[in-house]
Image (cartoon, rainbow over all chains, first blue to last red):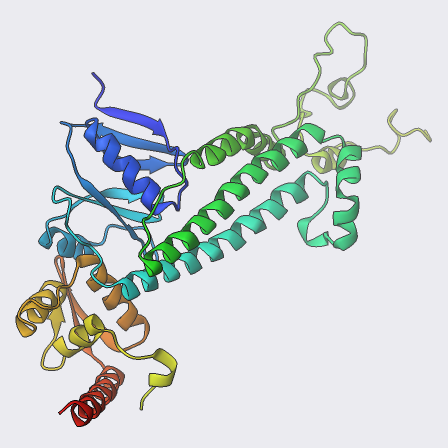
Length: 276
Length: 104
């Protein structure tokens, strides 16, 4: 039997009560939270245990914090790991144990975390512009309001239709999952302030998972584009065509970098120069 | 009153955590014990509350980290922290006086 079990996280990445509940349910099935990679969550197989889970928002860099662990362990909590660079995951066998004994302080922690994630959202928006700008066939810093107006037409005319639509769809799902996450955080803060029961929001995690699967071929295509490995020459053996190798000799290197090829080939006085 | 308009009043947990630094440097676990002893168990600090307060006080320059020894991180109160505590103490005294005047 495998010791590590991998699951797609069905709950939104900022849905604190939803995630706490999901980890507790998995622990009851004998799956203890271990770590995350993208939309995937890794669990270690253990004996089934009934625990209370608490997610502590991470301040700054997502490193293990020995002081935090000591404080929690002193209060009877066990450190299980880090969830997506956002939360430290703690568990307690005592189902009545309280982590936050003052709602004002908890609200401060959530407000601070929310601000961090809003800044993260700005970075995500920047990534949107970069990726879509790439398939618009122009530098992102040249984008103006008129670019947005003619964006779909220009993109379609450039012929990068499939990567463009995949990028748009994938980013739409990822952005939607992020925005929903922020709204869940706001609702959670409100519930803490008003003392209402805190509910999770299921299935939002699938948006991120599907979005990233759709974006995967776009990322591969982008890396190929940027590294110049997207060039696939036709096999012209036996076709009767004269190739650049025939003209320039065996040393000619087929390369995706058009500027390199243009420099290499001397047009003056060759058959490539239509004037000659 | 130093910055009270900007930062609002201290909650009970904030007040006692800041109080714990008045006489010496403290680490997290010592703070929890101090507050429990001082209030005879009336005020209990959850680990999440204490961790958040230590971060908040550092952000606001009310305390500063002095040393890290293994898993233990120690802090001391700053001049600004003392001023904030003094202001809060004066506010609470005024509240008590007002209450006593009316009640007794």
